[in-house]
Image 1 (cartoon, rainbow, N blue to C red):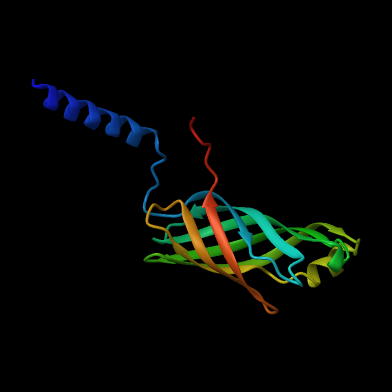
Image 2: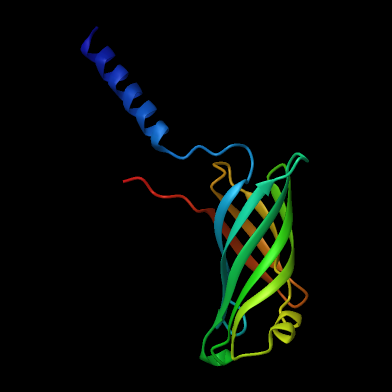
Length: 160
């Protein structure tokens, strides 16, 4: 083998090894993701969370659940709400729609009784676009009061 051929073979071998280290995602959204929204309420609040998608028997349809936190600063009275929600998601091409329902408000500061806190928290819904590498989704969060930008990314351990 010539020196040029050995370099090409070595480069190919390195490329194959590096590809093997990268996470491989099937053509779906199954698994755990992290997410956040743009800031709102005078740029003082943001929603952050973790969501898990589980495939159903129907192709491109998922059940899901997530926990999220709405964190606000001093402008909004240092409001903090931690919520558990159940959801369904459907993927059509690269579009993903998530419809949710508030199951339980796990924590709220300032305190409100749990039933009242749940009634006062609007379900978080999303319309997203899956990236080409299937490791990120970007789009919109919406509820009855607001539309926000939303970003989801896969919750994977980085390999060093």
